[in-house]
Length: 154
Ligand code: FES
Image 1 (cartoon, rainbow, N blue to C red):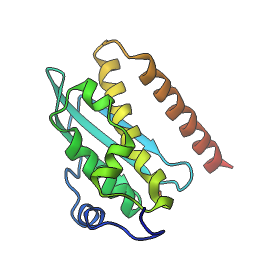
Image 2 (spheres, rainbow, N blue to C red):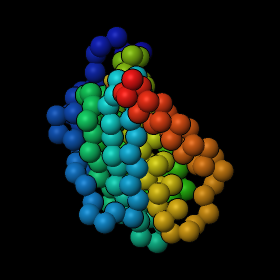
Image 3 (cartoon, helix red, strand yellow):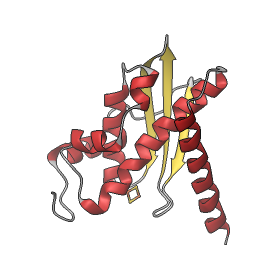
């Protein structure tokens, strides 16, 4: 297990030179999520062709771990089918970065949640069937988002 604050070389590499940074114009799906505990935000864009994610970009306003996990998530997801992308876990993301400090584990949820939201958006826009588990994940994200908005207003 990594020490409290030490980042792996891979995390630092992705943080310093993130892959697939930016936005996709007229993306097929867009997912935006915020982290309730720190206020960081991530937006992820996907291009889908014949059920394959052919392009993916992200914008993240967040910490080093959030940027690194976003970057590696885009690398991992490019070329995957929608079903394969939905099966991705934050453990897979963390392992691909050779781990994260324990207090930064929550940051990795941002990219996987944004990916799920982008896929949800794509399926919804195209009148495709949304799996129950994705519907539930979307509901949870919306609820958290509302809680965050409420917190910022008060
Ligand atoms: Fe906010 Fe890492 S501290 S995502």
